[in-house]
Image 1: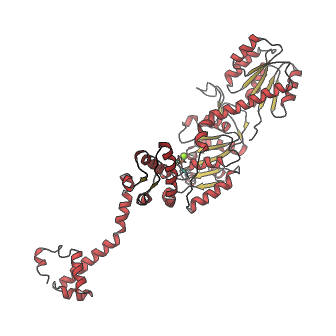
Image 2: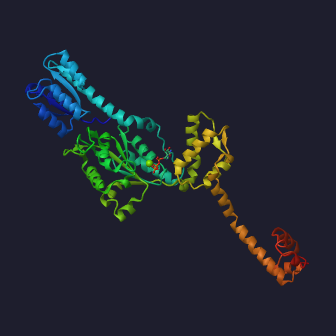
Image 3: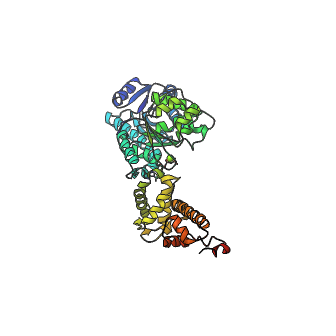
Length: 463
Ligand SMILES: Nc1ncnc2c1ncn2[C@@H]1O[C@H](COP(=O)(O)OP(=O)(O)OP(=O)(O)O)[C@@H](O)[C@H]1O
Ligand SMILES: [Mg+2]
């Protein structure tokens, strides 16, 4: 697991205490020191401090006042209070105001160290809890089904190769082809798999909030920014950030994103300080970014920065041979969910689904299988179970398949009629002219319904 350094601020007016605490903690963490409440508050903003060790009695302010201000402005900063003497009243008040713990200045080395490590762990956990847990459950059982198609095999091999490298991957493909599934799979296979996987849907985020969603904001940065907010880049620190629908990112923010990628630092909205972030980027889009660059709606420099490893997922209709494997996978998933035992689709049912176009790709297939498993009893899905809209294309294809046969029949029909007329409706003469035995000719007359197509009067002439 990557050990991300924590930034700790030591606030005490006693230089000796400051230096002792620094000596204890500096091996694993970045340390800042302040001798007053006021300088402490400005250092927290400036260096994005995560933990504060705070003296109860300061020269300029009461430590509890500083604590209140810290918890009010920086809700995710944890504070450990340090007091010269043990005083229950102050301790209780400090905890009520949101302090993590309360220690006296007679602390020993191990006590401080283990307390700080506990806070570090807690912060890590709450970060994961908030941003990861909801994703995690569905994430752990992410399966990227490829099937046997050459295209998907190539993608699978490429994905395995790049998953462990810190390179940016740009995934393109129609809606429902599995862009998000692939992004999660890449993360799961990477060395960062125990770190957060954070998604930003740039297609769904309200435009005015995109910047703060990505980079966070400070309290008061704009109207409505009532508290500090951690952006998705920071949430994903150490892990993977999935920028979905990147083609929708506003032009001015494209420039900002490019800077962040190049410099590896973010700036929260309303802050002038930068914070280092270590994030692996995966972007996805179903629009043609190269075309957007041509039209001038997508920045060329950002395009090339993202286009390091491009992966284009094929539409389902281009890999229809993978259908059986995908069906089997979704049958397993929905049998389990609905407690059913549908083992397979009949061959004719698979043929019908293979003729379909799948505009909604794998998502559409999954929805169909879910619907059929939910509604059907028995152990096999038959052609009759497939909703009509999925069968129309097969019927059309079948009719198209008879096109040549029909054209030949029409030609024969026409030729026989003209020859009959020329031979004054004499069958034997007509058969001879056409170069076929009389019996064949008679058979054709009947099969092509040639006499039926003649007026009654004319029919009497045929001898
Ligand atoms: N290779 C795959 N293996 C297993 N399931 C898949 C695969 N590809 C897609 N799916 C299923 O299809 C659904 C849609 O996939 P996903 O959300 O990744 O599509 P997308 O390309 O991101 O679509 P959109 O452009 O609409 O966001 C997923 O919920 C998943 O269940
Ligand atoms: Mg998607």
